[in-house]
Image 1 (tube, rainbow, N blue to C red):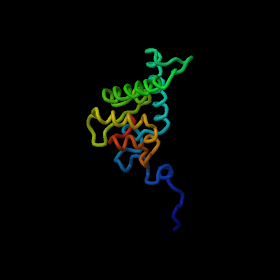
Image 2 (cartoon, rainbow, N blue to C red):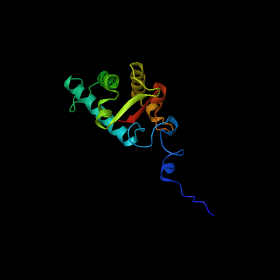
Image 3 (cartoon, rainbow, N blue to C red):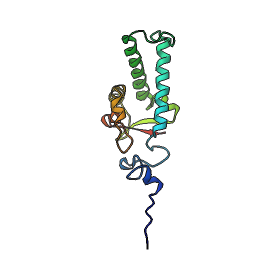
Image 4 (cartoon, rainbow, N blue to C red):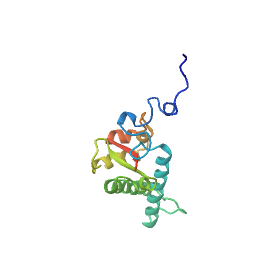
Length: 151
């Protein structure tokens, strides 16, 4: 009797089954690990919201740009403040909520204040968010002890 050498659909996407399996999370549906498409859309929404706030406060103009480096840092600070505020209050940024995601601590319970702060500072550095493990968690999530999941 010959065995089938064709990998199952689940194992072809991830070497051990699916992202989040090692974390005890389901393959699909609520509490499954967020996929890259939703993450990117959420990040774009959050960036647009930060730009809108910067525009309303006079820090940024779509015609003139930021003006100088100080204004760029203010824009990043606005992005970070919105991330921390929304994650602390609603377990997800505005973009996360729009696309049906939330940030949860690995040990369960309330995400708290320090996790969103650490996660956001590392997200603003960009590089930690690009270092992704086999469970589709960026280094910013691993260090903060969080995971981005579907609602």
